[in-house]
Length: 78
Image (cartoon, rainbow, N blue to C red; front, top):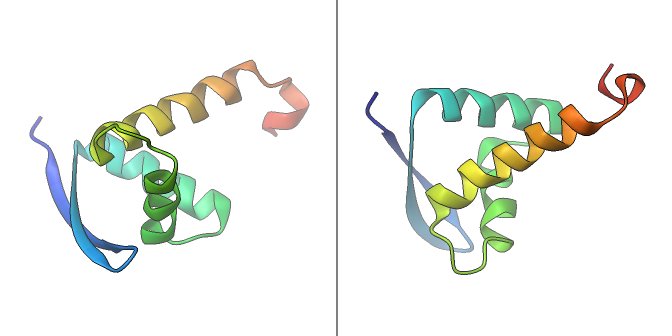
């Protein structure tokens, strides 16, 4: 599975994110669930990524989101 590269404008500059298709799909689903755009969600992840690369930060963000959901009580997941 090869990563797909997509470009975004973040804080006034163009940047690219390379993710495998499964990560792109999960990220799009998260944006829809959060009522935001993909670009806005990536911008938010970028702001909190510290020294990590953006693609890595997106993968970790998705993993953290899934872990939090798995740990949430059943009522919160519905």
